[in-house]
Length: 211
Ligand code: NAI
View 1 (cartoon, rainbow, N blue to C red):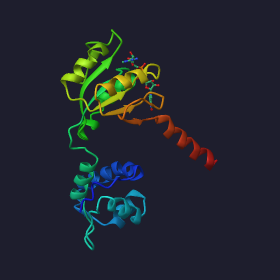
View 2: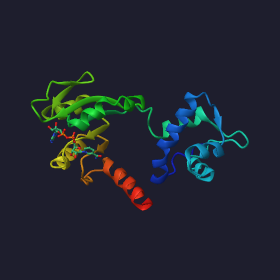
View 3: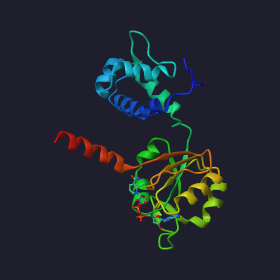
View 4: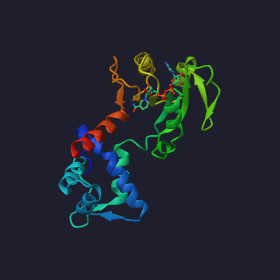
């Protein structure tokens, strides 16, 4: 088991959170084991895709038994780093920053929110979910004193590169970037650009093709 050193393709990695969600649902319904066929029917992907994906990690199934749901759930969580206690900060306490801060599901997935930062004097000192909004002037000191693994960028695209570079220089490991620009900075920091409108435009395409 566990061929963990092998580099897993990002295409597979991007499917893992979905497996994790489905397995979590199965666990909630006290389903303790499942065949790749059953899982494939629920998820709308082929059984061979599931077997191939999970084989990237040495496979977790046993012939004739299927997969142990709890074991697979935990292993995928482990692979995704969900038990590493990653902490996050949010940069930008506007509509989006607050919505993300208020979304407690991220905490349930293991990502603890440690701080919220903004540049607007009007917002400094306000609280979102018992976390005080701090001024960006305090960022460097905060990151040096606390463990910060991930920064959520919920600020306008003007100036986001500068903020991203600053965070990378401070040693933050990952940037979850919601600003409408694909970040490209001088650092090996991991960046995940999120564009909700990409998903909306994909839906638009589907409606358009149908008509
Ligand atoms: P907003 O205007 O409500 O909030 C932006 C906040 O960022 C303000 O509080 C502002 O003071 C703060 N800010 C500006 N520059 C800053 C800096 N350098 N450092 C720290 N804080 C700074 O805007 P909203 O609606 O929250 O959106 C934030 C950004 O996210 C926008 O650029 C928007 O286009 C983008 N967005 C992206 C989505 C996506 O799917 N990627 C979805 C929704 C919004």
